[in-house]
Length: 409
Image (cartoon, rainbow, N blue to C red):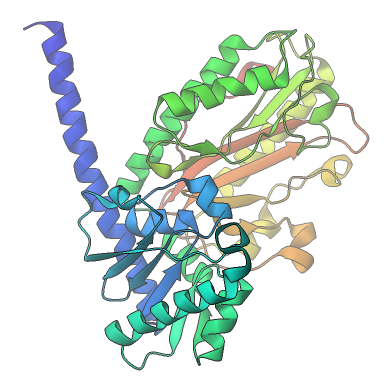
């Protein structure tokens, strides 16, 4: 048998496995939305957030654009029926989906779409929403919505509707991943790792931060990925404090270079990984090594601590204690959920608990990012590390095999 025949056969098997995985994941995700609706005694949810629409229906259409422009929306009923209001000439994005589906044309009343006719368009939209509810859920006066602008909200409330927090329902639905979702997430992470490896190979003094960041975008799109949520890559003194996005700054040999991928890759799942290197892959200075050892200790201590059944407050209290000199510039959270994008929960540091913390419970099947940023207040450099994990009955299992600079430890 020719080697090309072996490759072709393998590709067919992989394609079949992926297709079955997609079917299983779609059914699971829709069932999770239905469960939340039933739990909240609500017949239907109206979705505008493109990530929520993707989760519930696996349709993706101009995600960044529709995230800013309310031009497509979906209603999911507790019995699994779906009505999709699609953007002009885009009904093809629903082809091949096994849904109890009715497709309609979307009505938009943004100023871009409607100009001075916004109020009239909003009334047309609202009457259709009420007609659909009356036909499929007679006498229902409750509707969950994830995101709705003031004009639409006012119309429905004036007509006697009680609007429920649909975003909270969707966050809870998305929190627990199925085995199939982990397969799809892993495919996204493999694409992200290709991008990280490419950046590692191409990193050299004299290029700009933007030159380097473009390599991650290249690999994401090449592998069928979608977008990158941020541009968090910084070098030298821009690594402290954290949260500088990449710029035209020229990289200098021996300085620190840190990044946070925030990459929405293949299948719409996010790969959220942070690593820190030296430019030119030089031997780190003693100060750089100390920063790195401290960040490495933080995320690995906290990964070892995490267990299903632990509540968020307990985890926050028991988490690795940040040395005083690094507290001011700490990262914004200890850990956060991850799925198609950053998701529930967002676990505050103990020092921030009173002002920004909320409680809940970790469960097996959650996917999380464990975070660290270590940079002294007034310091010249800092280290950003982040590991994406799945929480199992035995604790955290890393979803990425991309290593750390363990020779620095």
